[in-house]
Amino acid sequence: LRDIVSAGTVAWTFRGADLAALPHLHGERLEAALAGDETVRLRDTYTPVDEVDVDTVAIPVEQSEAAILAISAADDLMWDSPTLSAVAIDRLERHGHHRARRHVTLDAGHAIAGPPRQPMPTRFPGPGVTFESGGDQRRNAAAQREAWRLTIDWFDENLT
Image (cartoon, rainbow, N blue to C red; front, side, top):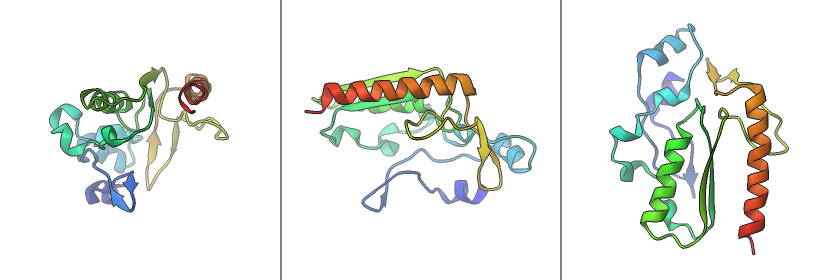
């Protein structure tokens, strides 16, 4: 994981090119986790949003013509989904995005993907570490169901 974080790799690409992303930090918490003393909260390895020029690290969502539903998890320990989703919605609003947009934050951890995915554990193996994704099994399962319902409703309202 140290090599991945050091390399500055990103999770999202478009047409083979890396999309902008928050840079990773190396901190005591990450080093302790890498030493095997604790789980890794990947969220702690990213530079906080208020410490960067957001325009240099934000995905240009305002270029999209789509209706956008952002679903965040309040206890997401993999990345700061509530803050970063709010940044995306703010960019849409500032640029006069004309399609529907909505940001919903659910009381859960990171693992709330929709069907057919089963709720995943709040801790799971990563590259030489154990990740902690936040929430608990009950809240994450409830949020997974709610996120799927919100998604289906969004499609019903916005696909024509």
